[in-house]
Image (cartoon, rainbow, N blue to C red; front, side, top):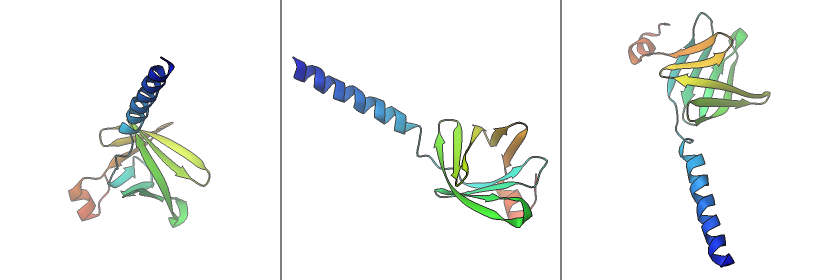
Length: 109
């Protein structure tokens, strides 16, 4: 009887692990401009390029967990809430995805 419970427990853990991973692993692409500011996020593959002050660009890893985008750098992590083509960092900081036409023209929204 304990073996059956053990196997059922393993099966439940497998389903829980699969659900935990299911929302992760998707990737973003393209450029996001900061609303009312100079910041820029550019997602390419598994990396994000963060335009920082003074012309410095930082490269960081990120992950997508449901509607959260988590950018991990040397100083910690920043969580953005994804709402359509907008990434909201909180405290009034938002980034909006450039359209293909804007990106080709090199304009900012």
